[in-house]
Image (cartoon, rainbow, N blue to C red):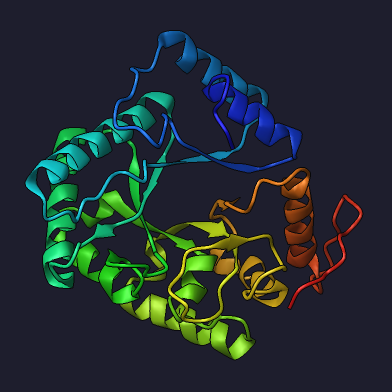
Length: 289
């Protein structure tokens, strides 16, 4: 949700569409410079959450590249990432989601090493701050790392305190990277692979997005639920998986008028299909695959 008008407005916007989980940027995500959090902004944010309790996570700026081979950009990325994590601690946000980074032609091994070193550097400076850093799987566009489960596993294996880290699974990115979880057999296979490499205990959150691109396209383009190549069946399988029942799940779908409500209504309908549960709202038509 947008933080235009103040961080607290994102909570209010979430409440307006009956969200139970929320993701925000804690600063302008298109600029390096960030204003310090004003005490009244922190107060208003916490008051809004007391009025409308929901699970919350933050996403870091897309400018940050913890795998950058350029020394100046690497230092700038580390410091910006640390500042965002500290902002989460101040706001009481338990999760900071981030894309691992792009190796910029220097190769996967070098890029993964730089990410692990940056995360260790961040962890030392965070101390006991109760913020989990969640690696997000990527679509694999360009030289971006994190599109294979093995990349995430190697980062977790290389950091000194893996307990600080977790994983956020993005469904659009999962399909675009080549993981076909659209059938029951495919779903079981993909998540068994995730368990074998990363461990399902590390999966702390989800981004629920359909994909404009088909399987293995390696292109990061989000679509509304049921309107893309992921399709409704895959979301039903995920939403009815008891292993992930308590993990917060947020939309990063296109922000056309009324689509947040429609996407949420469809997801709630899919979650209840065949389970004996019923939605408190009129169900949406199950279009898409």
